[in-house]
Amino acid sequence: MNSFSIKTKNDLCSSYIKKQCCQIAFLYGYWYGSESCSEHEIVFFFESEAIKAYVSKILSDVFSLAFSPEQAVEICNEDMIKKIFSLFDSDGSCAISDIIYTCEHCSRYFMRGLFLSAGHLTDPHKSYQLDFTGLSEEKTSELYRFLSWQGLPAGRSYRNGKPILYYKSMVKIEAFLRFILASSAVFELINAEMIGEERNELNRLGNFENANLKRTISAASEQITAVKQLLKSRQIKRLPIELQYTAELRMKYPEASLAALAALHEPPITKSGLTHRLKKIVETAQAL
Image (cartoon, rainbow, N blue to C red):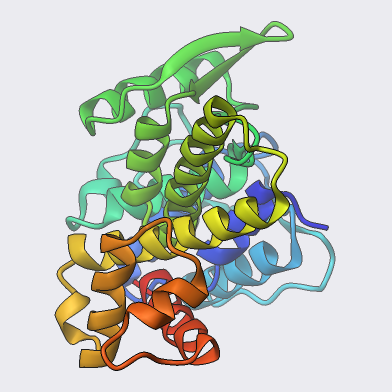
């Protein structure tokens, strides 16, 4: 079973990058986060088949390169490496290239590439942490300054004698994930926070052992998260009238069971009909 970090990365790979300047910025970010890269050799390693397919496709589109199905991509041809560094506008040093500012979106894709190669995200249902490891001291310092300039200041520390950059705040992790356009992970992060708050409330009330209540709260939290996402993005008005009505009732009666919420409709609807509507609302929010 894939970790939450791998799932997030695989989800990012379902959104292809169309503009070539952003493709180059992405590849530069992936290269920047890779340990086995120098001016003499470029080796890309991948945590999943989805990441390999995604990076290989972009490499193919930008450089017209074809790759075998191994779990790594190795480029040793000096002329090709020179061409890559030329497009990266880099001499192989640790200084972050200005190509990440070619268009307003390039910096996002630079960080997406770096996250795919050197980032790790814990399951938000267990703890909040996003970090970057495996970078040299110089690259860590460069990235630390870059993130600060982007309004995404990270913490800095050492693990086993090696430098890391990290976020441990839900708010900062959400901001970073929004920056790299990881909408599915953002949704899961917000949902995990709401479930955590509900669990804390249940602990205070002494009802945490009630399995049915836990299931109801978990489902309701996901639904309320979805409605809030739709309201925040101003997409709620694009829903059919009946779904808007159901969303309004769910927000008004957050603790109501499915049976009770179905009965609150005018006219009342069936429990299965309500389940179908709520599923549509959640799916629409997740697709934003």
